[in-house]
Length: 246
Image (tube, rainbow, N blue to C red):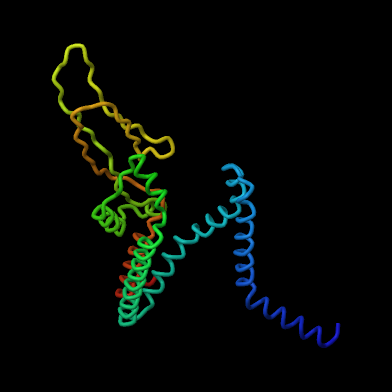
């Protein structure tokens, strides 16, 4: 090879070593979008889609596997070795960043909801099958409960979630000779048992329906509780000093 070719090869190799991951990521995104548009016209079945997404599922499972040890070790070691003043400053910056990003997300969400109404069809479908929407108070209480998990092992794969169960009180009817009473049935959905499909029969007057909240779980990692626990242990180690050293 000539001197010019060698210099070009060295430049290409240096560029690839420096930006190889970014280049492969961009190519993967472009390839995924292209395959998505092309395979959409084939109308694949659910089983074929599941087989096609199997490599991506493996990647997501490996990434989720790294979340728990990465969060706990990073927070504990970082807060234990950080100065108290720097730790307080970092906390103020983190809270400010969180509040600002939350404000921006809420603003963008309100603008999009008012302008284009995203997810309107899916929302109508949820309400048509009798899905009960969790109130803001229950969601806030669930968030606070997840900050203090009762079991750290369980928090690695489950989090607390309030479940709302409908309770129907049938009204009292006088006994009518020769006539039978009608009832209202709530049949659980086949795919999601928490969704109850109402089957309304002729019934006068209408029954009284109430909703009861029950404790439940969701098969998701309780990242918030793990972060709070790791930050607390790291702060305690930082305050203990040499006494917390192994």
